[in-house]
Image (cartoon, rainbow, N blue to C red; front, side, top):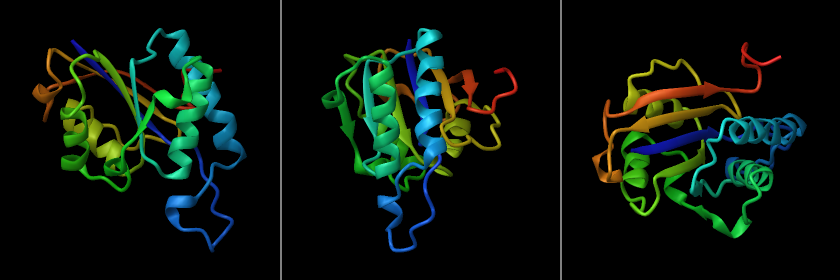
Length: 166
């Protein structure tokens, strides 16, 4: 059994028109929501073994908030450029290349790719993964290369303004 968490980066800052998209930082809501969502994942016992992030500033900063709450070392986060502005085939290649040593993994990245990817993998019909949204997918597989279209099941979908949270 394999488990994959897809976490969209926290809300980012749009105030500086001189910054490249890649270099946009988190805004105050992003810095607030990421630790909160990391705590929810921790409380549900869903902390993964492998952490992989887009190197874009807002994604890697979100990943650092999560690793801090999860008491993991920052050097355990692998940055993968293929996640930035990725489509379904690119994201699938990243997942299929995970080491089978790991039963669970998390990817920190971006929309629209992550929403499309979650739906592709699980036929979940998620309209939009909001900023700092967390999707947990489960796969009846022993090899990451077995993961593909419709092979997963949506186990959890949570986000900062989720109606289930008070």
